[in-house]
Image (cartoon, rainbow, N blue to C red; front, side, top):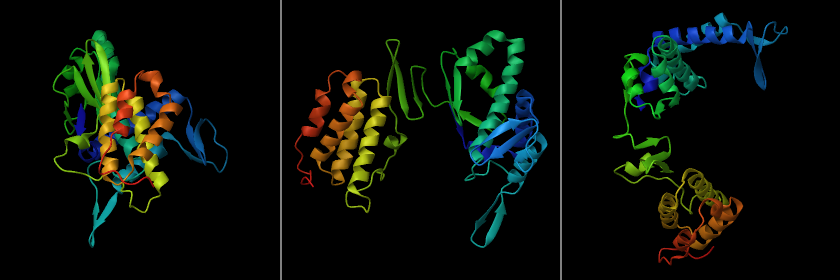
Length: 290
């Protein structure tokens, strides 16, 4: 599931009510009166030291209300004040959105536990990261309750067609023979046009930096994929792009070989000969070894 336009749809009144209750809940559970803010962190305290920058529940609520009520942006020679939605581009923006959703989830589950304990327990395997929700083995329980959890201003879309496959963040997950098959998902693959994803060899960035990007993606693919076919497919796509951008296949091969040894690729995929063949194939578009 995915919220469409989460940041722009939340009403300020809804946010204020939600964060007010969440802040009071946090202070109540902390059993402290203040949050002291330091250069390298914060702490819940009952009696802050003199001169320490601090919030109590009321002053923190007031600070958040001020942020929501005083979010301005300019367009040409005009200045506008945002009156709906989470202010985007500010540090607390993701936290405001996340805690607002948490408020609705906490409030609903607290009630559900009292009237339908079984259904509430089935929702324990439902997880959310900001605006992406994944529900595992809920047997449709989440779909039954979701309309009662969040406010009408938020639209939640079901992304997957059936319950045997789903795109979760950058994961492509399929259930095959009662096993999870995990590969890399990149929504840019579905775009009907070409995009600039990696920098050309002729850019102003150093060669080591550009090859480092290739290496970091190799590691990401390796950590995500739990089967060789998906791992090989992603490497093949990326390798073709880098070669078209002017990189030499042998240099990329050396980078792959170094990382394969360092991160023990063979510990996860026992036979890597198919991958090695990708790098050793001759290609007329390869540039000289520089």
